[in-house]
Image 1 (cartoon, helix red, strand yellow):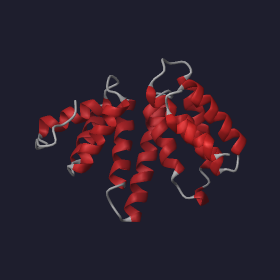
Image 2: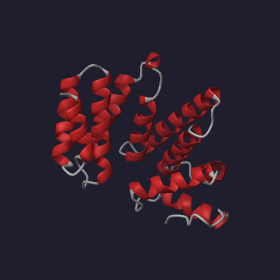
Image 3: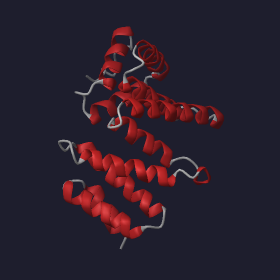
Length: 195
């Protein structure tokens, strides 16, 4: 359920937004739209507080850990203090690790962790770890019904290979992704960029 733009974000609307973010029934696009609305309304702190409480009440839930980590990353995008961004990014990374220790096949935790790590400075040496997470995601997706967001790990993995100077590997993963997701124009654009 998307929040109406004109409605104030009261406790019920906040709970509904958080319910959607942790729901396995909600689509990737619905979750992205909800994050966008929370950011635009300046309600990330409210969402974080709600998620922190739910996680405290349900410490064995990988979904609350994964979504709280995602919330911390969303918050990073709204602040300019690099130190505070670093603290939130490290907290998010620990939450993704917690979610993955509880449920190794948690798509959201692994994908969001890999994307976040891809932005860490090269001096941190996270490139191989990022590649491994995207590779693992692709392997896990092979055993599940195909979903539109499953194209994303192929796109990101190819980018990581290209960044590492492995153009042949990038081409291979983008070609495979293009075969699985033929209507996704991004694969054609990526492949054209290699020529």
